[in-house]
Length: 493
Image (cartoon, rainbow, N blue to C red):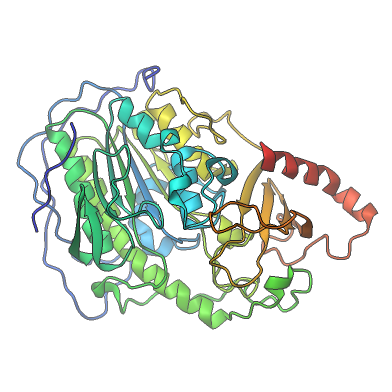
């Protein structure tokens, strides 16, 4: 089907001395036929490129606005330790950018996490506490609203917020291809206001639309913001057909997967019985879906190079949260443990000097993404942020808040929890609180039901809860009274 025609038409310069990248001659992308069968080589593989939208043979117009483009790529349920499947992405953004080694989801659940990314706020402030109430998000607080009003051309391609009505257009985007519910093949999309089915694999469909959006900068000289959100690597994992039999590296499992004694864990986790074999199978399925994401990232890099915009485009790649591969017997997200909270995170912006392949070990969270984008664009935020710009290395923190609410989708009494991840420790409290039918935390008295404290330096797999059987004197020595006060203050701020 033909695409519907596109709709729609700072505080300071971003960087002193950051020049506009000279527009180069267009370099057409190679297009080859797909091989839809048989085993596929592992990375670095030589799988053929997927078809992309045709480009007019026109050189880009010269840019007069020095502000960077912003390309944001968000995967779904992608934990760390998945670099094998995205080798070219790691080579590009890790080798020519910054790897944030301690990046976290502030809520390990899809919609709350995405709302934090868009608003720069913790879930208890933006109000999207579960996946069923996306309209709780105040759209005035979103980064896309502030970028659009500052003259950016804005586009959304892929997943937006869970339970968003497909026929409702996403606010503050000039162009969009929104999929809800999200499926791997032959999805149901809101295509610039027209709801229709589009055949093809999700990653490839949204990739092609994002490429076409970028390509329009040949004739539209405004800087652009592209929000690209894939289905990969969410369950039920369906890889692209050419990757369905790809062999993945063996995985021995982590110590947290084979944890024998869980008597120091919260009651719901003591009953968790998922196995190493189940975790290994989930990992395999996830890696296979991510191979197509890596292909899309290759095409994005090629397109930016062809447009002469590779240097002055801020590119960020991350996931909405991690996922447990049977760690502590758990095969989901939603828990305050490292595999669930930690996410891959890369940032590249060569024109700003962020193209040298460095590692940044600051504690970072999704609440930092919106402030970073606005800082890059030279925009003073006009709504509150809980995060800060990662472009200023002076911005640092000793603790990072993560939180989660027991909601209607969970049959097991997981309980609401909040945690402070520190530089080398982590303190967690579980509460008697549950969301009501409107997604508000009105059920329960908030009593603390269980606590955990981990020495992440000595115990990175969180096998030993230091509060299990601890005396008041031992708790005082661990600094628990101060940790509890700090966590309470963060939850109410």
